[in-house]
Length: 173
Image (tube, rainbow, N blue to C red):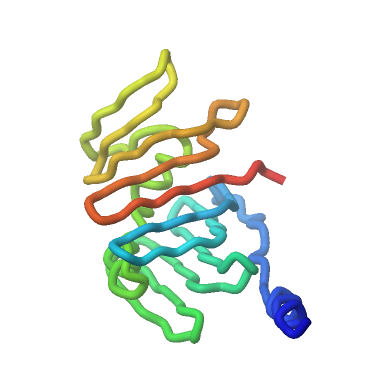
């Protein structure tokens, strides 16, 4: 009974990030993320607002508590941890590797979640018919495992030496 009360209390403390209403928003997605790196792992929810000149990402526990809040613009990336300490770096990949222990490839991921290779970086692609099924880019092997009816990726698996990241994107509300 105490555990149920504690879980209900903690769920009540969770904060759902607001939907973006900004005109410069390219996409605003929610979903789940699973990360396996070395002998460690992370599983939770993801909220990502991708704008023309910035990104805002929330990594949330399975019950909705913010584990990390990442804000990136053209100059820097800032990660606010669960304990409210802030960390900065020039890019999200090095910042998440230093603080979380694993790399979040945000610079390419904005294209990959839309089912295409990132521009400005060489890539190798495999297709099933006319649909992109696999991609190798920036040291990552990306597999598009499931798609929505409109053809956009629903589930992606990213692999790189020592790390595997899976994303399941929720349908838009």
